[in-house]
Length: 275
Image (cartoon, rainbow, N blue to C red; front, side, top):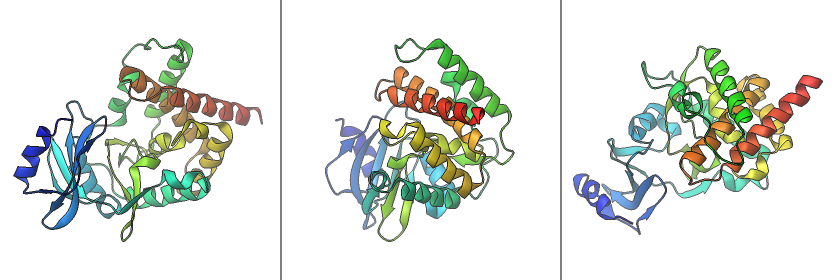
């Protein structure tokens, strides 16, 4: 790991290292203290899609992790304790975890996106603007169907546009002992609230990219957030393929999960069309 990348922000913001550094596919991280408070330094790797994190998290306010320092190269956030992931609840109480996700979203998205902020058209450019990438799991037919669906959904978006996380799955919602469930690691695009559900619906593992799990979750989201069930399933389909494309373009994750989610959404939509 390149620990030298941490040195500049540590010096610039007068941070004190408070644990071993570590890294993810997108960032280098270091537990620190900031003015006596436990914190976490996150230095973005080149090409990171989280460079606007500080602004996005501040826009969301108290439903998100607090930002102590931040620019387009790095961010210092509060350290969440105990840091329980929402994914840890899924195996024993998936419905309960889904309701918690709805609670978080209801508190998170209360203000419109800033004027002129990048939108979910840009988020989907790998699906809209590029050819189908070669991969044995992704057929041309599935890719083209998802492209059409994504464009149709874009053109019929709700007029209310929020500053979306766009990767609000179970691993990006953590529990703090005093502040409750908090959001981390935003990507940030402007769009209708329905789009926010897509990455949640096909996580945290491939086991949950199945029609029975998907249909139950969609019912809860629709009832709690006042959304059309078919539209949620259509976004899940299009986003599942988009997610698979991202995984093919940058082979960090397995594209199979996105493909599973897309096929599950198609199966549920097909059953609903026949009833």
